[in-house]
Image 1: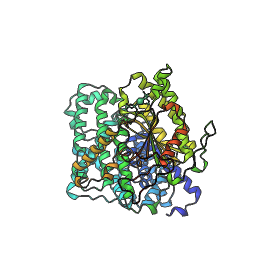
Image 2 (image 1 turned 180 degrees about the vertical axis):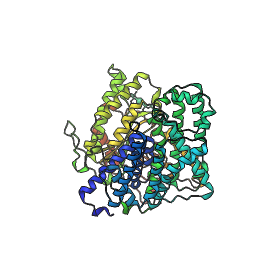
Image 3 (image 1 turned 45 degrees about the horizontal axis):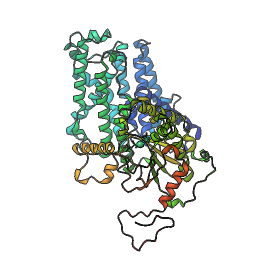
Image 4 (image 1 turned 90 degrees about the horizontal axis):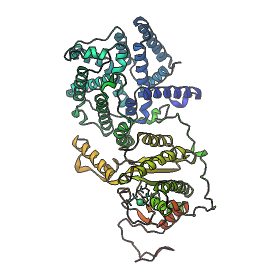
Length: 593
Ligand code: IPE
Ligand code: IPE
Ligand code: MG
């Protein structure tokens, strides 16, 4: 079904249908949604459609407001309509419409999906398992068909996952581990419908646990049962041999999925009595910590993948289309400097690609005026605005600002919380999108207030399509910590057989950094009179031209940035080579010493 033959209104309906599915996944299961974001972009809409379809059918089967006969009839009706829609190639229901498109686009086998709907229909009659063996066989009947179609989908996209017959039992155990983890996280929801989806024999071995669960009481027997079950799920999820031989992309996804499900089990253990009332899930910060490196690695792996996904352009770009994005044609210019100063006219080829700034001197600026240090930081935020306006006017592609270092935790709690409040406020009030600025965050969420992390991730997400200037905020950033994290990730990949230690190259380490595509720093400028780099971007600034100025950061404006760049254009960069002919100093270059 080539896209170019699809009439425009149909295309719009289809996009809306996939958007509906994406929202459904994100709302119901943020962990699953996060995992879909690690797969090749072209495939994501297909996962959303399949997942949303399964959930829609599951909701009908589980609807607590209706009796069994009615639920069975509704589910039958839903699947009959799906068959009709599949034959007709479209549907008036958004979930089925997206699923129909996915099945046709990727040539999936509808009968496999039907098998799992049939299992849901059987479940309406009641789900009871005497033993783990019965439990597994039920789980496998409904989930394996989706796993098989998932594998088929990957193969169609050119991602070949070798399956070893002698590992069949490990694959099955792993999927059982996933399902048991989900059952534990969803315990409250199932109990609210009077269901307890665990084998009778395990309940019997913890006397009193079943009564406690059904009465909503977190008794010692319930606690022991839960801890036994999380242990069992961890054991099933621990199948390291499944990683062996996987290509880099799938290996990262598998590894991230395992870590996320393990984190979900940690959340179940940590929930205590809340488990009986709320769904247990890893916090947003934990998810971010686990997913950020995986996202970077998969982005790289899928870029290297030579797969036939291009001719099957999905109806929806992989990223969200909910938020309004100002297209590059409609971005506005920043307000000019009050003095009317204009940027120097420098040849674009002479400009540094990446300028990084250590904005130092806020505290001294305030102290010199008898003001609290926080006033210096506040004044400094005007200079931040000036810097990125100046970068836009000059046409710099990358500007990176050191906002808070991992060493800055040594400051008073008052100063730190004042800084965080300021960051929050600035992130909320700047109009980055209006100027075409893409904001990215480098640093660690560890120790930061959760709402600040949320704010950073929000701005990062909202501005992700802007292309005029990439503004990186190094916030809670430490260069050594970044390199250590990268080394740890490489060591893990070596220990699990994903890479050969003898073949680790610079690019492999760079791929593990917070923002793997951040280019080398050409110009590193520090204000405030200190001549040091204070743990800032050691990897990227290895060959940076250094520029130190005495002015305190709040006293600077965009003209200082322009001056720094102008000075840079007079430098001669050699990268270790020797000049072939004696160099003549460029005009205005400082005399050689
Ligand atoms: C830099 O200014 C800003 C941050 C570290 C957040 P300082 O606060 O270090 O200012 P001085 O060096 O004490 O003057
Ligand atoms: C570096 O400034 C960190 C930031 C600008 C965020 P500092 O003022 O903290 O650096 P040192 O401690 O003087 O080296
Ligand atoms: Mg300082």
